[in-house]
Amino acid sequence: MSIVPLLTQSAFDPELIETLVSAYEDAWRQVERSGSAFASPRYRRAAQEVVAKRIIEMAQSGEREPARLADDAVAYLVRSYA
Image (cartoon, rainbow, N blue to C red):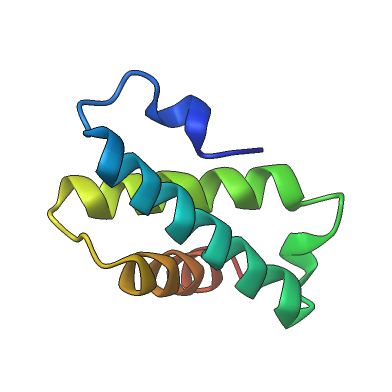
């Protein structure tokens, strides 16, 4: 899953979309490197969707720093679903 389909109907400008894609990719790499079950084929798609939606939600709230977006999304996934 990619974050891009979730952004097609957004009001974000192209530069911010690049930032969100970068944050999503960074967040997902963190999940994969952690060895978490979220990265397994069984949970991957759902976990990726949670991460993507959280990044979008935080961007809608005004966050623009890619590292903070990524870290928050990973923390949210773990906090909410572990």
